[in-house]
Length: 289
Ligand code: NAD
Image 1 (cartoon, rainbow, N blue to C red):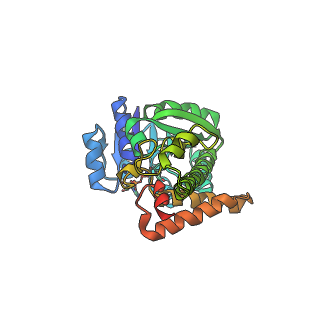
Image 2 (cartoon, protein in one colour):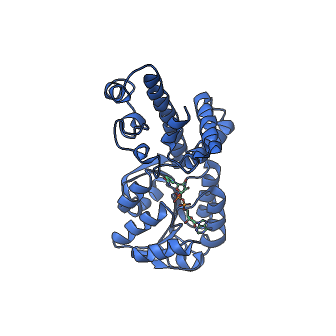
Image 3 (cartoon, protein in one colour):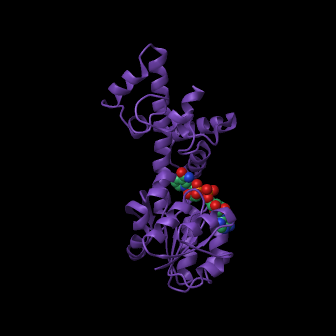
């Protein structure tokens, strides 16, 4: 298939490479020359403008920082420039309202479009192990599945337009709270004379188990390997978690959902970001306690 890929950053770089590895012809564009050069090394063809990259694409994937950029790229340079009937897949994490607006605009212009945000970090993007949560019509989902599969360990339809973004923000709000809870429990155990590794051995086999504790233990040298063992470098940055929490809080305000714990979690990640931990893995909350 001819696939245009826009946004070759930490996530998009590996994703585009996996599409090329699967045998697709990938036309790549990014504002960063460095990112473009890396994509070319990984089997993609470099383009210097979006309209040229999408000119004969059967599918266009976007993996961009936020909703405003996704909207600008799609409305200015993709819709009306890619062949009619092409499939558009936005894999960025953006607000639900923009995701729905883009799908409506694309559909009116003769394209199928899905929102398809991902769970899994840079390692999963490089390894083709992402989970895609997809919003859009059943027929657009069927078209999207084979495009996403070379980048995925799972491709799941969440529902209609925007449902992928709803799933993503709810998942990450839950993860944000789990991580804080894990850090607090570890610190409380330690302050009360319980060896953290012993607490891990007990709680990871008890009702406190969760991914943050069992598989991503935020305490250096304790439990499973995680960025905590490397001074919280790499992994999923506090600033990105904060971005996702802010999207969730905006959606909670719009929908009237009561998310007291989510709101408290947002405050805690905001404080960590202000304290200079924005670029560190989100398990670094442990160092603030
Ligand atoms: P990134 O900043 O590394 O990459 C974004 C890329 O988009 C950059 O290379 C940038 O040059 C490019 N870009 C910006 N504006 C552009 C434009 N107008 N035209 C073309 N290219 C443009 O970000 P990332 O970590 O790859 O994240 C991408 C998306 O994936 C975000 O929405 C993020 O929330 C989401 N996400 C990230 C992770 C993660 O662990 N990093 C995990 C899940 C989801």
